[in-house]
Image (cartoon, rainbow, N blue to C red; front, top):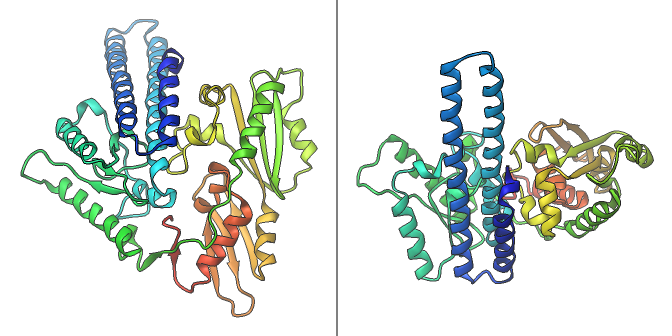
Length: 398
Protein backbone atom coordinates (compact mmCIF):
# COMPACT_ATOMS: atom_id res chain seq x y z
CA UNK A 1 0.00 0.00 0.00
CA UNK A 2 2.94 2.35 0.53
CA UNK A 3 3.50 2.29 -3.22
CA UNK A 4 0.66 4.78 -3.62
CA UNK A 5 2.51 7.22 -1.36
CA UNK A 6 5.89 7.23 -3.07
CA UNK A 7 5.95 11.02 -3.47
CA UNK A 8 5.26 11.50 0.24
CA UNK A 9 8.03 8.98 0.97
CA UNK A 10 10.46 10.92 -1.25
CA UNK A 11 9.46 14.20 0.39
CA UNK A 12 9.93 12.74 3.89
CA UNK A 13 13.31 11.29 2.94
CA UNK A 14 14.49 14.62 1.49
CA UNK A 15 13.30 16.59 4.51
CA UNK A 16 14.97 14.15 6.90
CA UNK A 17 18.26 14.40 4.98
CA UNK A 18 18.06 18.20 5.07
CA UNK A 19 17.29 18.15 8.79
CA UNK A 20 20.23 15.89 9.58
CA UNK A 21 22.51 18.33 7.77
CA UNK A 22 21.22 21.15 9.99
CA UNK A 23 19.50 20.10 13.21
CA UNK A 24 18.83 23.74 14.04
CA UNK A 25 16.43 24.00 11.07
CA UNK A 26 13.21 23.95 13.07
CA UNK A 27 11.16 24.85 10.02
CA UNK A 28 12.09 21.57 8.36
CA UNK A 29 11.59 19.72 11.65
CA UNK A 30 8.07 21.11 11.89
CA UNK A 31 7.30 20.46 8.22
CA UNK A 32 8.43 16.84 8.42
CA UNK A 33 6.23 16.22 11.43
CA UNK A 34 3.27 17.80 9.66
CA UNK A 35 3.82 15.43 6.72
CA UNK A 36 4.06 12.39 8.99
CA UNK A 37 0.96 13.46 10.90
CA UNK A 38 -1.08 13.79 7.69
CA UNK A 39 0.08 10.43 6.37
CA UNK A 40 -0.64 8.56 9.61
CA UNK A 41 -4.10 10.13 9.92
CA UNK A 42 -4.73 9.14 6.31
CA UNK A 43 -3.96 5.50 7.12
CA UNK A 44 -6.31 5.65 10.11
CA UNK A 45 -9.15 6.93 7.96
CA UNK A 46 -8.60 4.12 5.45
CA UNK A 47 -8.44 1.50 8.20
CA UNK A 48 -11.77 2.69 9.57
CA UNK A 49 -13.34 2.48 6.12
CA UNK A 50 -12.08 -1.07 5.58
CA UNK A 51 -13.19 -2.16 9.04
CA UNK A 52 -16.68 -0.83 8.36
CA UNK A 53 -16.74 -2.66 5.04
CA UNK A 54 -15.60 -5.88 6.70
CA UNK A 55 -18.29 -5.57 9.38
CA UNK A 56 -20.89 -5.12 6.66
CA UNK A 57 -19.61 -8.19 4.79
CA UNK A 58 -19.67 -10.28 7.97
CA UNK A 59 -23.18 -9.14 8.84
CA UNK A 60 -24.54 -9.79 5.36
CA UNK A 61 -22.91 -13.20 5.07
CA UNK A 62 -23.09 -15.28 1.93
CA UNK A 63 -20.80 -17.65 0.07
CA UNK A 64 -18.02 -15.11 -0.48
CA UNK A 65 -18.17 -13.48 2.95
CA UNK A 66 -15.29 -15.44 4.48
CA UNK A 67 -13.00 -14.87 1.50
CA UNK A 68 -13.86 -11.18 1.25
CA UNK A 69 -13.35 -10.73 4.99
CA UNK A 70 -9.89 -12.30 4.74
CA UNK A 71 -8.96 -9.99 1.85
CA UNK A 72 -10.05 -6.95 3.83
CA UNK A 73 -8.06 -8.07 6.87
CA UNK A 74 -4.98 -8.36 4.68
CA UNK A 75 -5.52 -4.85 3.31
CA UNK A 76 -5.97 -3.47 6.82
CA UNK A 77 -2.69 -5.03 7.91
CA UNK A 78 -0.86 -3.54 4.90
CA UNK A 79 -2.19 -0.09 5.73
CA UNK A 80 -1.13 -0.52 9.36
CA UNK A 81 2.31 -1.27 8.01
CA UNK A 82 2.24 2.06 6.15
CA UNK A 83 1.54 3.83 9.44
CA UNK A 84 4.45 1.91 10.95
CA UNK A 85 6.82 3.12 8.23
CA UNK A 86 5.81 6.73 8.83
CA UNK A 87 6.46 6.24 12.55
CA UNK A 88 9.89 4.84 11.66
CA UNK A 89 10.55 8.25 10.10
CA UNK A 90 9.47 9.73 13.43
CA UNK A 91 12.01 7.47 15.13
CA UNK A 92 14.62 8.69 12.67
CA UNK A 93 13.97 12.25 13.85
CA UNK A 94 14.42 11.22 17.49
CA UNK A 95 17.62 9.24 16.85
CA UNK A 96 19.07 12.11 14.83
CA UNK A 97 18.88 14.39 17.87
CA UNK A 98 19.29 12.11 20.86
CA UNK A 99 21.42 9.27 22.19
CA UNK A 100 20.33 5.83 21.02
CA UNK A 101 20.95 4.20 24.41
CA UNK A 102 18.96 6.86 26.22
CA UNK A 103 16.07 6.52 23.78
CA UNK A 104 15.81 2.79 24.38
CA UNK A 105 14.57 3.50 27.90
CA UNK A 106 11.51 5.27 26.49
CA UNK A 107 10.34 2.07 24.79
CA UNK A 108 9.83 0.09 28.00
CA UNK A 109 7.44 0.23 30.90
CA UNK A 110 9.02 1.81 33.96
CA UNK A 111 7.24 -0.70 36.21
CA UNK A 112 8.31 -4.04 34.73
CA UNK A 113 10.79 -5.36 32.12
CA UNK A 114 8.55 -5.34 29.07
CA UNK A 115 7.72 -2.96 26.28
CA UNK A 116 5.10 -0.31 26.88
CA UNK A 117 2.00 -0.33 24.70
CA UNK A 118 2.37 1.79 21.59
CA UNK A 119 0.32 4.77 20.48
CA UNK A 120 -3.29 4.43 19.41
CA UNK A 121 -4.90 6.37 16.56
CA UNK A 122 -3.67 9.95 16.27
CA UNK A 123 -7.12 11.11 15.28
CA UNK A 124 -8.70 9.58 18.41
CA UNK A 125 -6.67 11.35 21.04
CA UNK A 126 -8.40 14.03 23.09
CA UNK A 127 -6.25 17.04 23.79
CA UNK A 128 -4.29 16.79 20.56
CA UNK A 129 -4.72 20.54 19.95
CA UNK A 130 -3.12 21.23 23.33
CA UNK A 131 -0.16 18.99 22.47
CA UNK A 132 0.36 20.79 19.19
CA UNK A 133 0.19 24.13 21.01
CA UNK A 134 3.01 22.95 23.31
CA UNK A 135 4.97 21.85 20.24
CA UNK A 136 4.52 25.25 18.62
CA UNK A 137 5.59 26.96 21.85
CA UNK A 138 8.82 24.94 21.87
CA UNK A 139 9.57 25.92 18.27
CA UNK A 140 8.89 29.58 19.04
CA UNK A 141 11.53 29.34 21.77
CA UNK A 142 14.05 27.66 19.44
CA UNK A 143 13.74 24.27 21.14
CA UNK A 144 13.62 21.20 18.88
CA UNK A 145 10.59 19.16 19.88
CA UNK A 146 8.77 16.07 18.65
CA UNK A 147 5.22 14.78 18.92
CA UNK A 148 5.74 11.43 20.66
CA UNK A 149 2.86 9.67 18.87
CA UNK A 150 4.70 10.10 15.57
CA UNK A 151 7.28 7.56 16.77
CA UNK A 152 7.33 3.85 17.48
CA UNK A 153 10.15 3.92 20.04
CA UNK A 154 9.10 6.71 22.42
CA UNK A 155 6.14 5.45 24.44
CA UNK A 156 6.10 7.86 27.39
CA UNK A 157 4.79 11.40 27.45
CA UNK A 158 3.21 13.47 24.69
CA UNK A 159 5.97 15.89 23.70
CA UNK A 160 9.70 15.19 23.63
CA UNK A 161 12.13 18.11 23.87
CA UNK A 162 15.32 17.23 21.99
CA UNK A 163 17.79 19.91 23.03
CA UNK A 164 20.01 17.42 24.88
CA UNK A 165 21.22 13.82 24.24
CA UNK A 166 18.67 12.59 26.80
CA UNK A 167 14.98 13.01 25.93
CA UNK A 168 12.99 15.42 28.05
CA UNK A 169 9.43 14.09 28.08
CA UNK A 170 6.34 16.13 28.85
CA UNK A 171 2.88 14.81 29.64
CA UNK A 172 0.29 17.28 28.36
CA UNK A 173 -3.05 17.45 30.15
CA UNK A 174 -5.84 19.61 28.75
CA UNK A 175 -7.94 19.52 31.94
CA UNK A 176 -7.18 20.03 35.62
CA UNK A 177 -8.22 16.56 36.74
CA UNK A 178 -5.80 13.63 36.61
CA UNK A 179 -7.17 10.08 36.71
CA UNK A 180 -5.36 6.91 37.81
CA UNK A 181 -3.90 6.38 34.34
CA UNK A 182 -2.60 9.93 34.32
CA UNK A 183 -0.98 9.42 37.73
CA UNK A 184 0.76 6.28 36.47
CA UNK A 185 2.06 8.22 33.49
CA UNK A 186 3.39 10.97 35.72
CA UNK A 187 5.12 8.42 37.98
CA UNK A 188 6.68 6.78 34.93
CA UNK A 189 8.05 10.08 33.64
CA UNK A 190 9.44 10.85 37.11
CA UNK A 191 11.36 7.55 37.13
CA UNK A 192 12.79 8.20 33.69
CA UNK A 193 13.74 11.75 34.62
CA UNK A 194 15.48 10.50 37.76
CA UNK A 195 17.46 8.05 35.67
CA UNK A 196 18.49 10.64 33.10
CA UNK A 197 19.41 13.27 35.69
CA UNK A 198 21.29 11.02 38.16
CA UNK A 199 22.40 8.10 35.94
CA UNK A 200 20.75 5.96 38.61
CA UNK A 201 17.17 4.96 39.35
CA UNK A 202 15.82 2.71 42.06
CA UNK A 203 13.00 0.44 40.94
CA UNK A 204 13.19 1.25 37.24
CA UNK A 205 11.47 -1.73 35.58
CA UNK A 206 11.57 -3.49 38.95
CA UNK A 207 15.37 -3.49 39.17
CA UNK A 208 17.41 -2.29 42.14
CA UNK A 209 20.25 0.20 41.90
CA UNK A 210 20.90 0.10 38.17
CA UNK A 211 23.24 2.86 37.07
CA UNK A 212 24.16 4.24 33.68
CA UNK A 213 27.73 3.96 32.42
CA UNK A 214 29.15 5.73 29.39
CA UNK A 215 31.48 3.59 27.25
CA UNK A 216 35.09 4.78 27.14
CA UNK A 217 35.25 4.17 23.38
CA UNK A 218 32.54 5.48 21.01
CA UNK A 219 30.50 2.85 19.21
CA UNK A 220 32.03 1.48 16.01
CA UNK A 221 29.62 0.60 13.23
CA UNK A 222 29.78 -0.70 9.68
CA UNK A 223 27.06 1.43 8.11
CA UNK A 224 29.37 2.31 5.21
CA UNK A 225 30.07 -1.37 4.50
CA UNK A 226 26.35 -2.16 4.71
CA UNK A 227 25.51 0.47 2.11
CA UNK A 228 28.30 -0.70 -0.17
CA UNK A 229 26.89 -4.22 0.09
CA UNK A 230 23.36 -2.99 -0.67
CA UNK A 231 24.52 -0.91 -3.66
CA UNK A 232 26.29 -3.91 -5.17
CA UNK A 233 23.26 -6.14 -4.60
CA UNK A 234 20.92 -3.66 -6.28
CA UNK A 235 23.18 -3.78 -9.35
CA UNK A 236 24.24 -7.43 -9.45
CA UNK A 237 21.45 -9.23 -7.59
CA UNK A 238 23.42 -10.12 -4.48
CA UNK A 239 26.48 -9.13 -2.48
CA UNK A 240 28.41 -10.22 0.60
CA UNK A 241 30.60 -8.22 2.96
CA UNK A 242 32.80 -9.35 5.85
CA UNK A 243 33.54 -6.15 7.77
CA UNK A 244 35.03 -8.02 10.74
CA UNK A 245 36.03 -11.59 11.55
CA UNK A 246 32.93 -13.62 12.27
CA UNK A 247 30.54 -10.97 10.87
CA UNK A 248 28.84 -11.10 7.46
CA UNK A 249 26.33 -8.97 5.62
CA UNK A 250 24.34 -10.53 2.80
CA UNK A 251 22.14 -8.37 0.58
CA UNK A 252 19.87 -9.72 -2.17
CA UNK A 253 17.62 -7.82 -4.53
CA UNK A 254 14.56 -8.90 -6.49
CA UNK A 255 16.74 -8.85 -9.63
CA UNK A 256 18.34 -12.13 -8.46
CA UNK A 257 16.38 -14.67 -10.51
CA UNK A 258 15.45 -18.12 -9.26
CA UNK A 259 17.88 -19.60 -11.80
CA UNK A 260 20.85 -17.63 -10.49
CA UNK A 261 22.77 -18.01 -7.25
CA UNK A 262 20.56 -19.17 -4.38
CA UNK A 263 20.74 -18.09 -0.74
CA UNK A 264 21.91 -21.57 0.22
CA UNK A 265 24.75 -21.25 -2.29
CA UNK A 266 25.87 -18.00 -0.67
CA UNK A 267 25.81 -19.59 2.79
CA UNK A 268 27.74 -22.63 1.54
CA UNK A 269 30.47 -20.39 0.15
CA UNK A 270 30.94 -18.76 3.56
CA UNK A 271 31.64 -22.16 5.16
CA UNK A 272 29.82 -21.14 8.31
CA UNK A 273 29.82 -23.23 11.46
CA UNK A 274 27.49 -22.36 14.33
CA UNK A 275 26.02 -19.01 13.43
CA UNK A 276 23.45 -16.50 14.60
CA UNK A 277 21.44 -15.55 11.51
CA UNK A 278 19.27 -12.43 11.68
CA UNK A 279 16.99 -11.85 8.68
CA UNK A 280 16.29 -8.15 9.07
CA UNK A 281 13.31 -8.10 6.72
CA UNK A 282 11.35 -10.33 9.09
CA UNK A 283 11.61 -7.82 11.93
CA UNK A 284 10.66 -5.00 9.58
CA UNK A 285 7.63 -6.92 8.28
CA UNK A 286 6.56 -7.88 11.80
CA UNK A 287 7.02 -4.26 12.92
CA UNK A 288 9.46 -5.23 15.65
CA UNK A 289 12.50 -3.08 14.87
CA UNK A 290 12.12 -0.62 17.75
CA UNK A 291 13.83 0.37 19.95
CA UNK A 292 16.98 -0.03 17.88
CA UNK A 293 18.53 2.57 15.57
CA UNK A 294 15.99 2.88 12.74
CA UNK A 295 16.65 1.35 9.32
CA UNK A 296 15.44 4.67 7.86
CA UNK A 297 18.81 6.09 8.94
CA UNK A 298 21.01 3.07 8.22
CA UNK A 299 20.12 2.58 4.54
CA UNK A 300 21.31 5.86 3.05
CA UNK A 301 20.09 5.85 -0.55
CA UNK A 302 16.43 6.74 -1.03
CA UNK A 303 15.81 4.11 -3.73
CA UNK A 304 17.58 1.41 -1.77
CA UNK A 305 15.55 2.25 1.34
CA UNK A 306 12.36 2.15 -0.73
CA UNK A 307 13.35 -1.29 -2.03
CA UNK A 308 13.96 -2.55 1.51
CA UNK A 309 10.62 -1.25 2.76
CA UNK A 310 8.79 -2.73 -0.24
CA UNK A 311 10.51 -6.11 0.11
CA UNK A 312 12.59 -5.82 -3.07
CA UNK A 313 15.80 -5.79 -1.04
CA UNK A 314 16.58 -8.50 1.51
CA UNK A 315 19.31 -8.06 4.13
CA UNK A 316 20.75 -10.76 6.40
CA UNK A 317 23.33 -10.33 9.17
CA UNK A 318 25.28 -13.38 10.28
CA UNK A 319 27.41 -13.58 13.42
CA UNK A 320 29.65 -16.55 14.14
CA UNK A 321 28.79 -17.54 17.71
CA UNK A 322 32.28 -18.83 18.47
CA UNK A 323 33.68 -15.43 17.52
CA UNK A 324 31.72 -13.70 20.30
CA UNK A 325 33.14 -16.15 22.86
CA UNK A 326 36.62 -15.80 21.37
CA UNK A 327 36.49 -12.01 21.77
CA UNK A 328 35.82 -12.47 25.49
CA UNK A 329 38.58 -15.04 25.84
CA UNK A 330 41.04 -12.63 24.22
CA UNK A 331 40.35 -10.33 27.18
CA UNK A 332 41.12 -13.14 29.64
CA UNK A 333 37.56 -14.28 30.37
CA UNK A 334 35.66 -17.53 30.00
CA UNK A 335 32.50 -17.22 27.93
CA UNK A 336 29.46 -19.22 26.89
CA UNK A 337 26.74 -18.13 24.51
CA UNK A 338 23.08 -19.05 24.29
CA UNK A 339 21.26 -17.38 21.42
CA UNK A 340 17.70 -17.74 20.22
CA UNK A 341 16.18 -16.26 17.07
CA UNK A 342 14.39 -13.69 19.22
CA UNK A 343 16.30 -10.78 20.78
CA UNK A 344 15.82 -10.99 24.52
CA UNK A 345 16.27 -14.76 24.74
CA UNK A 346 19.64 -16.04 25.91
CA UNK A 347 22.83 -14.02 25.90
CA UNK A 348 26.56 -14.11 26.51
CA UNK A 349 27.77 -15.22 29.94
CA UNK A 350 31.28 -14.02 30.78
CA UNK A 351 33.28 -15.15 33.83
CA UNK A 352 36.60 -14.06 35.25
CA UNK A 353 38.58 -17.29 35.90
CA UNK A 354 40.67 -15.54 38.55
CA UNK A 355 37.85 -14.94 41.03
CA UNK A 356 34.83 -16.65 39.42
CA UNK A 357 32.95 -13.36 39.19
CA UNK A 358 30.68 -13.11 36.19
CA UNK A 359 28.48 -10.93 34.09
CA UNK A 360 25.72 -11.48 31.58
CA UNK A 361 25.41 -9.65 28.26
CA UNK A 362 21.78 -9.69 27.21
CA UNK A 363 20.84 -10.76 23.71
CA UNK A 364 19.06 -7.39 23.47
CA UNK A 365 22.48 -5.74 23.63
CA UNK A 366 24.05 -8.30 21.31
CA UNK A 367 21.25 -7.69 18.81
CA UNK A 368 22.71 -4.24 18.19
CA UNK A 369 25.31 -6.05 16.09
CA UNK A 370 22.55 -6.81 13.60
CA UNK A 371 20.01 -4.00 13.89
CA UNK A 372 22.55 -1.20 14.30
CA UNK A 373 25.40 -2.81 12.33
CA UNK A 374 27.78 -2.42 15.28
CA UNK A 375 31.14 -4.11 15.58
CA UNK A 376 30.95 -7.38 17.58
CA UNK A 377 34.37 -6.57 19.03
CA UNK A 378 33.11 -3.21 20.30
CA UNK A 379 29.95 -4.76 21.75
CA UNK A 380 31.78 -7.50 23.67
CA UNK A 381 34.61 -5.19 24.83
CA UNK A 382 32.13 -2.57 26.01
CA UNK A 383 30.03 -5.19 27.83
CA UNK A 384 33.12 -6.42 29.68
CA UNK A 385 34.05 -2.84 30.57
CA UNK A 386 30.58 -2.27 31.99
CA UNK A 387 30.53 -5.51 33.93
CA UNK A 388 34.05 -5.06 35.33
CA UNK A 389 32.87 -2.06 37.31
CA UNK A 390 31.61 -4.47 39.97
CA UNK A 391 28.04 -3.16 39.91
CA UNK A 392 25.06 -3.81 37.73
CA UNK A 393 25.28 -1.23 34.98
CA UNK A 394 23.59 -0.18 31.77
CA UNK A 395 24.60 1.64 28.64
CA UNK A 396 21.26 3.30 29.29
CA UNK A 397 19.83 0.08 27.89
CA UNK A 398 18.59 -3.27 29.24
